[in-house]
Image (cartoon, rainbow, N blue to C red; front, side, top):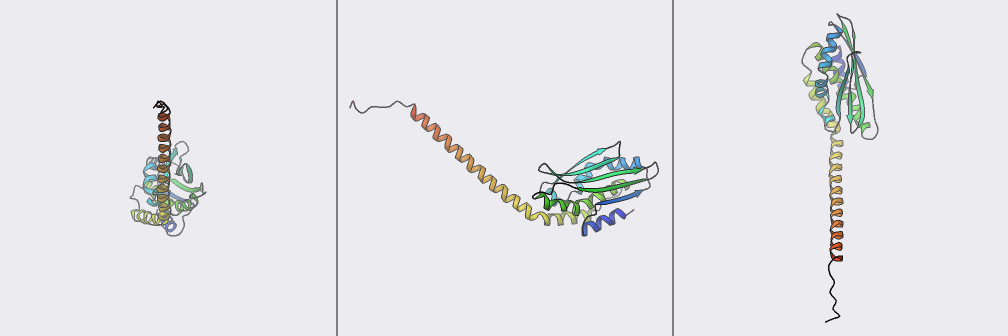
Length: 202
């Protein structure tokens, strides 16, 4: 039952597959139970650190009646991509199928969305297989994805850092300008209420 893992390893080394499936010798209800109960943990583990560093966050939603679920990758309110999973079968065997759907690729997201397919999707494939089989996840593949995704996103992270510094300076200047304006107004109001002294009587 290593077909999915071999696909995942190849995807990480080259480019991620968009669809995969694996057969299990357990009932569909049991396979779904294992997968859905591990859904949030899978999302946390399988999202590479490089993507987390640029604010890409996974959310998990499941639909028990249909035995379907998805992980949605969000960044600043935009959905960059989605990994869908469905469990089919009967009381003695099951098939878990996964597919990837592209999301928002505008602006910076256009650079990040391919990294979800390249680095995150193989980890999700492995984590789902591990959850259903009850085996450990492939930590070496996770470490590689963390390292490679961090390398890919390092430039964007630096740009974001400098952008935050620039925005911070701009906001500080604006606060200073507003404070100076408030002081000027207060000074003018105070001057207008002071009594005037005429020098003509001296």
